[in-house]
Length: 370
Image (cartoon, rainbow, N blue to C red; front, side, top):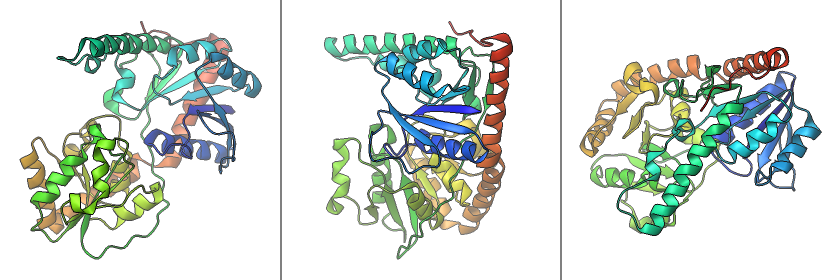
């Protein structure tokens, strides 16, 4: 098949969906398919170091996307760019009657009415902007009318878009690893550093656990200047160390040597760092989020409700290494079953074949969103 993937590219932006799309593109190429990755807002030069073809595209003007589709003549399109420029892009694609798979990467992808965009007690100017964003999100949701199938990384996301054909398609793991050494026991926090990720919760935790013989290592890109202070060691507890931006392989090495992963981010999609931790047999202590309830149901660590419970859960795993080991074994077993890249991309490949054949014989099979 001739497959078109649309998203930002991992060589331009190191993010969870970009990492997953790169893995999918490489696997589909290994399976013998012709893959073109349209890198949204990508670079013209230098070229991309990939086994598949990459071309930059802007979605500001639908004509550019139309030209790319006309030139590449894809059999199927895999869209993983949330609902950004969604309705205009779907209308452009629909002109060519190419079947589309929409990959749900964030809880906001499936929300028709985003009430979070209407916070109370803001200025009149902000209220006008918030209502504009709210209406724009509702309009973008109409793009699902042109989607043939949906892939969901969480089971909890299923049945929310109005598209009839959908699959549960877990994220997968890239096992490249850069060895890492540290002079004492440590726990890892790995994410982009901004408000929704709540890095301040890790800092507060480290402050309270200075009596423990353990360090807390923070890695990630500072995307909110309010957190620039983490680059200054004197601004942090002595047991917390910011290591800057790390590649996926470097984070793998960090996690491999850690006691466990600490997560303070708000619910979004399915965190890649959960999969990284579980694949290396490490539990997760999460402050807010348990995707599909896996942590509690499968005993893969702890989900906390309050800061006190968060601290208590971290302390318990530090104080009970055998419990940590058993939860780590549970995590590795789940990862081997659920997050295998070869198996998962084969599942996606089967869906691509199915909707391509259905489109050819029956037309658009799933335009039910309102």
